[in-house]
Length: 444
Image (cartoon, rainbow, N blue to C red; front, side, top):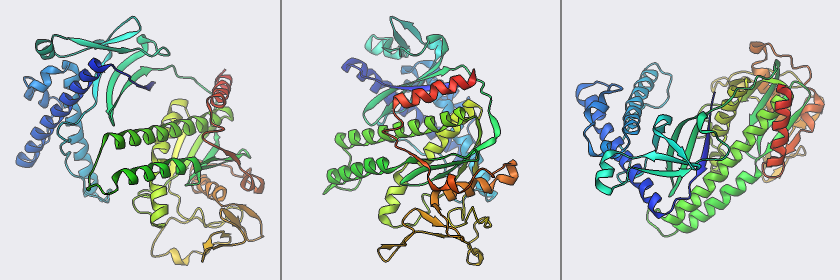
């Protein structure tokens, strides 16, 4: 099992110049590889082989200035991108993709690209990692390597790969390392259903009589600040305008989103481990962002919330922890009444008017709210429950027969008052440490 730790580098001017140089050369080498692969594809209708680019560009100046194994990895990644294009094209021809894929295109000239170093190329000395450069660099500048700090919480023996990642004027070091797998006794019949949203980022309902919500208001606040700042900086500027200040603002917002994702995903998985929940069911509709129509303002708010990345992070942590991750479509889960046992059909534009549901959901009409209030749902018998909890329960109902789930514990009490967690207040480091301690205690 492998993990990845990302560290922001604070290089001096000399090291920063080296980092910029190797990332620029990596970008140029990628474009060289893409050029040859595209010409081969368009003129001969052939795809480049995995090792063909290495033989072609072994004497290229961009290849020589990089460490040989790093340059090889860059060219192999180009070949792999064309192989992925081939598979996507085949899927499109079978009718499995809505948009026709296009061959990989060139990167921006003069840009920066990721550079990867295998462990065998690295050396550690005095808590620093020595990273080699190509022979051509030594001829030109008289240097053959540079160093970056080694994280104190990692052992060099466990390191497998190091990546230099440029992003918005900053440089990050990504350490890929081997981690010990922890076997935890989980119950596959205990399941957690997740309904993603906006104000309620994740609404979670389980069949063990517990429910909770991860609040999303702070994410909206961060995105609103970012949009306001970007709008002010771009006011009166031509289309495509970019500046160093915009890069700083964008990187700050991206860090905030990554932090939110990691906190929420780790908390959710640790919650499952603490309660021995062995299955997670995530409700997700394909193209639910680029196809959504909920008004210009709401569209912007919804699209900028990184729920898709959160879903992938939860899936990754679930697989590492031995939790089964199931993704299912969520059509009609917000309209159908779980307590009334309404039907849960799959979305069909031609038949949607034929479906009748028992309950009703609170919503705005002509600027006023129904007496249910926003976020409320009323069943046929007049029971008022949380609409998002109703949706999460219906997500579990979608796969109950398929997975053999018992949903008898999901009753009125679970759907009325879910526990609410704030990403910034409740998902703090101390709280996550408590969850981590519970995780190891469960494993023992």
